[in-house]
Image (cartoon, rainbow, N blue to C red):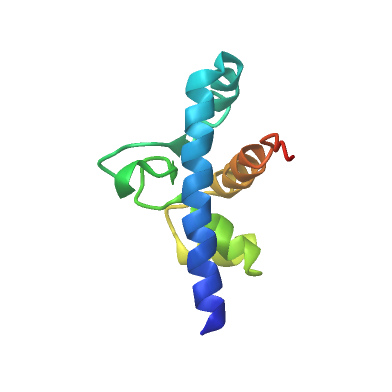
Length: 107
């Protein structure tokens, strides 16, 4: 079950990346404009503790990204979640790509 531990570690890291990004949004007004493009990504403290979800459903973006990362096709993900639309998956992928564009300063 080493893969399960790695998957849980990845989800744990994804949560902190999302929180760090949200802090950056509050600090950088230009990032707020970018977030407006993600109209299918919602944040509600009453739903999954405020994690990024798809259209207010109890379906975190991290679950969709995790399935795609582990080799699921878009059709398989859509079959697993009947309320999901192809545009939801596309936007989840774009949101994940946007999150990892953070500048890292080492040294």
